[in-house]
Image (cartoon, rainbow, N blue to C red; front, side, top):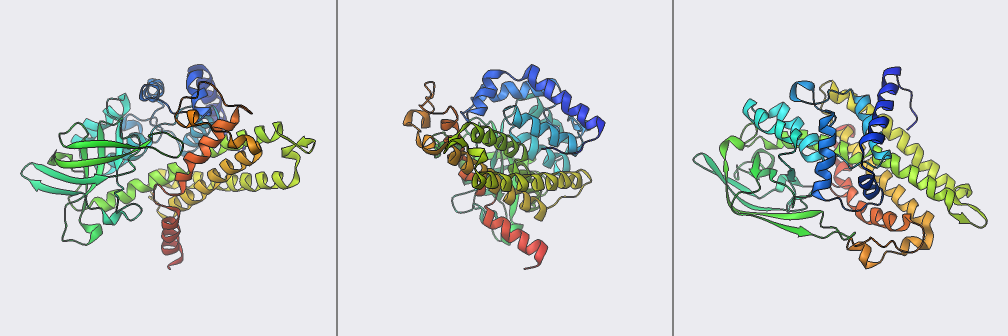
Length: 398
């Protein structure tokens, strides 16, 4: 986005652009631009490239091995990375668990897990949602019963993103069945290689097995893997969700998507002139761009508050709600710009065998794939209806 930055921030932007130009492999950026599924090795490759520069954990303070960036610098890096079609930094370890352990974890947990997030030894996934507890996380039923120096965990988690690659999962579990729903939940760190864990993939609309079901059958978890206090996990979950919902807003991804939309609209011709010159379509593009500019400013304001120690709830819900609406609107306009070509999506492409591109504009396959995959944005991380409820209760007192 076109914003007013200080000379230092502009210099940092130039540094990030040069780094991406020099170090981002073209084969990775091509796959990201085409919304093709990255392998675990490819995601780990980019992770290692960033960590070599100490740019992996821009949201961590230097005392924990992070970059110590300002909110503006983090905004710049995320935006430039998206515009360059760099693989996203997976949020579960870096953006979610890391800050939580820094605030609530023991010194032993910090010393054990934080370095392994940075050097790539541990791949984390999130164990929140269950078949009967999606946005209503207070209804989780996966149980953890204390047995000496272990908890015995039984239950099921679902929609576990990239759980097929993970070797650790952080979970909300019920340790106080007789307590009020929010007061009987604990936060456990569980080794995915433990006996009794089964992972089963779920294939999404775009044909990728991005999410999974995870089953726990008498899984033994050491007591030292409890974060904070027993039955206080709801407090930690709310803290973590603010980081997740801010990340879902995806200002950088929306900025990149808007640039692609404009490029397509300039190339597509309707009734003898470029689609971008059609007054109705141009107005729709302008509407979403104005919304994106406003959200970008709100995102920066919230990042500044977070840096000052404020843990917002309603603000992160606002960002999640508006951010997902904007990204889905861009996906929809992109498919509209492609017209009938957006319908060209052979089964081979859905299944990932897309070495032979479909007929029509090169953008057709990736635009359809992005449209289908991003229908999830308004559901995960707490559905948008839940976010409206949080906003109404927190800000309006309803």
